[in-house]
Length: 140
Image (cartoon, rainbow, N blue to C red; front, side, top):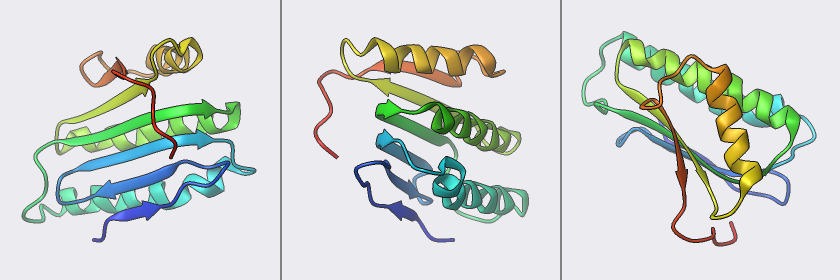
């Protein structure tokens, strides 16, 4: 299985998933015309990762992490991101997983989006972590 890399645009975040270390980073603005279409490659990557764990492939990471650092997320993207989080956390049947929702200092909107996701998901606060960044994000 290969890593996943999607470059950011003005309306979509960058996505970098590295299978060897078990990390996925989603960073930037999420305002695509069709959120489900944009995130489909990442959904598919997560499904393939699950197949690897189910088949007990060798040299897989012992922990998986999905990290979001978003500047803006529209409502359709948030719904899709929520579904992505649920799909990702299904992998915890095979390996410990965590989601980290980063937000910039003072960005109440992004913090509240993370809190909203946490409140509707069945994840513990150790599985879904809200974390304020130390400094504002650099441009993606």
